Length: 201
Image 1: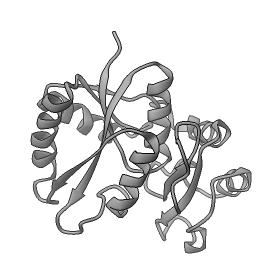
Image 2: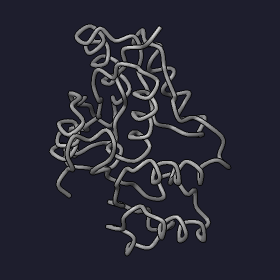
Image 3: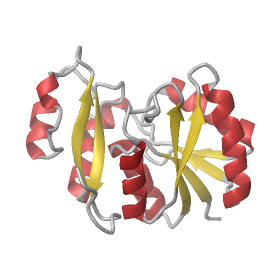
């Protein structure tokens, strides 16, 4: 049976590839879910402006739902608002773009269970497969740029770089996860096969 899904959406390459895999399997992605701490007014995952997430959602033709929370009550707020979305969108699942960090998966599974949903991890794999994941994202035709780096991992000059063949070559030389799974870098996806039009960068 195909699922009706809320997708945890950061605006970056991981959640975009999760969306790609879900759509390829024929699932109904009912909404994109992004957490926004009241302390910052920007997204929790990437410290991104909500307007940019909204622009992505419009280009993808999928509603964006912003879950407003605090750092102190993050999980509680997420769970309660997810339960509301479950009723409104008739959801049975929530999907995440995590690749191999077990702690992230355990948290997501616990969140889903508390909200009465099934958790899905469409791009889950092994750490050694992360370079293949980066290549798959680029070769599938999605366009993304680096919008933030962890300064102890990558030079700040990488902000603004496009994910392309030269990025693959350069990231391979760095002692970091090629997909930035530990926050080494974050991206903003602005075009690709599922986009009805490019998002302004």
